[in-house]
Length: 579
Image (cartoon, rainbow, N blue to C red):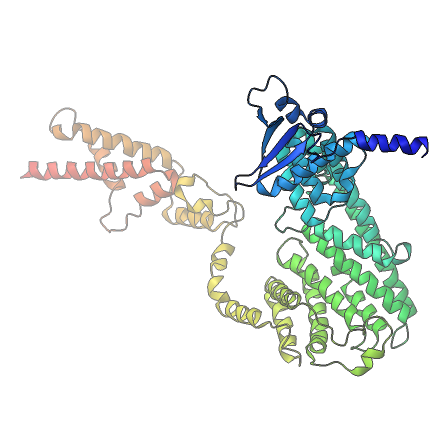
């Protein structure tokens, strides 16, 4: 036998093995709350070298160490599911002592390594715990592994949270960078990127912004990010405009061209996807204003490229999707469009939708469509989500009701005369229009009064307490006041006369009880006051215009009634004296 073989045999003989009754000096008892009790014959040197738990239990300072026969006894309490992991840790202690470490955790997988890590932490085995952490950080996880790791690692302490690095929330800056890069790819031209990567970018971006059980990954509060998104959208719309210009100038033959149809479908699909993203970012104005302006050109290009009405149905339905999103944004008031443009865009897409809807509602499409090579007829029956049709119809109704009455009448008249009046259903708009038209005169009767209000004072001269005295010749209040003044021939010293009334009424009230004394008022003053307060004809034409037109205050009314009461009191005293 060679020397190397002799040395290997010697090491094998000298290396301790777990469960060796002859050489073991420690019994490890693994006990569970369910009453399970496993005995493992071990060696104190191996256990103390690799485990802090056993090092403490086997030291002379530990008072409760029992002796079974000639062996020490160390009890380890664990849960039933963790018992096998503790046995594995004990075996790994022997493996590390024999081979000097290595990577023993890889053969146990993610779940097994996670259980071993728990047992290693319990038994204070830093070497084995470190090997488990290194393996878990580098190994691939499935969704079930991730959930198990999230339940286990946080309970082990902060020293092992590095395992969760791949699951932690990412900082906002890298997320924004990823989003912008993916958005540029998703809106790029078809030739510069593979269709698979572009579709994946669009799908993941939509997922990032979706509100489901979790909050959206992105929250755009930076105008710089929105500006870059607008630039990407503008690039896409510029390519779409260039394509439409080339089609309108070239005028393809009837029946279209396969390349044109494919490019049109890709562009419209990208625009439809961008609408979904912009609606979540509350940036629909970027595309709504553009789509309203090119609606007529879009319909013409689709008809030229797709040829017969039944061809390229997928492309036509994508156009319907875009129009539904744009009209919905306008109907909700998220995008403000002038009345004339709203009327035009509604007319365009009502006509387009009622031509396409019957094709979708057909139970079976023509078999000739199956042989088309344009990529649109590979599915025998193509349909559109019913919610899209409903949202389009609802948006059309809402926009129609925002138009002037005459424009509504024109749209409803064309709708009622069309053979495709079944869709969109404008019955609600028709009912509202009928009601508004019938009650319009009654509801707007106040306008005749508004037209009579002076534009100079805004009608404030009607209100006595306002203190406003309009001097505009167009003011009806000014005209009526001057008219009454001319009829009554009220002299300019009106305020002085009212002051005289105040003075005389106070004198009467203060001295009326001594009319026979020396303090009696002069007869001419009494006659003047009586003449001013005379209303024997029941009209009060002298005093009332004076007060209401000149002073126009609560104090004036008080003076008038005080004077009236005073002169009547004086007359009563005179009649008593005559008797």
